[in-house]
Length: 75
Length: 494
Image 1 (cartoon, helix red, strand yellow):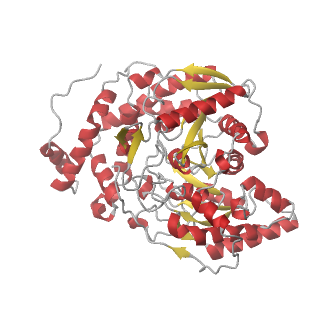
Image 2 (tube, chains in turn yellow, cyan; image 1 turned 30 degrees about the horizontal axis):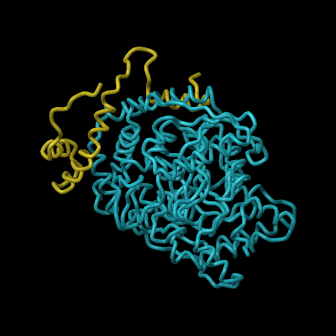
Image 3 (tube, helix red, strand yellow; image 1 turned 90 degrees about the vertical axis):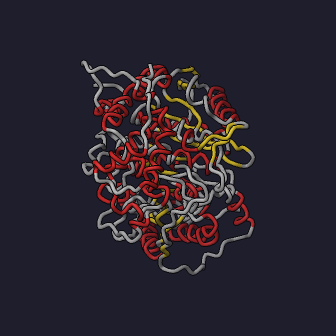
């Protein structure tokens, strides 16, 4: 299921995030970030809609590494 | 007529062993080819004439005294994000144009300890991302070689050297190998140390050899692979003698062919070449099984790739964000967008990787390898960076890594080999296997190359050079050449 997003970030939202982090990004760069974000938004929403269980055996980022090290299976 | 620059690693080692040629002669042939072609191809950013000559002289003596090492006297080049002690390593970035590391990357130490001769550092996109127009595709100089291992692919395709080393985060070995008609092996995540390699995205970065045959890739991998305490992600897994262990008999080999994802967005010519390669392998005794990847219906692979890259790029370059203007134009765009990646999205992407891995775990219960497209189209023009799929043009950034980034996300070894042409431009197919089973990838690729000659076809620029007659080995080159870093693009993908 895909979560519905009623709004997309505006320049003001990104400017607020940048200000909070003290990022040296002027309005022109904020517009670039927004443009790239808009192109990617649909795919990002699909990723966000993936449900991953909070219960064991839950997947951690390290799970992927263990799987590789063990030749394509979990130990 | 060919010269020593046109020979494979395996052929050169044989000639050195039988004393029909020396490493110094092979190096001079490669330098001659660089001298004659690289003003048009521009694969090399730093040429190390004096240093390489000294190494080749030492190698020549070692062959004479019976002390030759596994790659003794083999000329090679390094993507310029791989650190070399005392030799400029630019990362393809104006910010590191004059950076001289004190230590070499572990993979460089291993190649040097095996006797390989470093001809030069090779062009790359800035920090292994973007679309620089710096280097041209030897098959058509108006075309893009892809990247970010642009120089390594072009140098091997132009027969300037038989071996180069590239890196791959979303397809940076596989796609240039496909577009330039050479072999590119992206080893398993953790198989080859990345200590001393500029990171783009540490979770997805891989290294590997680029050559003109699978056998040559096996020679190089045998030297480069293995545990390294300097790289915390490096696996402690035994390294076989790949070159000596290659199979040529395909009897009983189980090949998986996808029914979804890989052919969904793919140029018809590439799909036809991939299916023809699978058919040829089946005729030699391989069994073919179709497989599905259910996770790709719900998990956005492109979103996993980009979210991880964005987050890790932003983290890696945090200290230099104040100097954003000093990066090239495409990396500035990437780094700017990267700032707006949430921690929750990043962790979702890292966790979702394993869902795709679980699909492949099922696939490899039924199969030894999978065969899929390498590039999903052929090389586009420098001036119009789009993926042509039938009559449709797609933005490159949306689709170019479709068949390749999945291998980085899952961490599988994958070899790309030439498997055809579309209007004179190379087509590549990928052969992937379960983690740490590079030997199966190499064996199937080697068996295929014993049956086909796509990998021995010559780009027009090389054919013209050979037609011009015997090369002049007395060419005078300066002791070294250092070109400026150029990040200019004629069209952009970010």
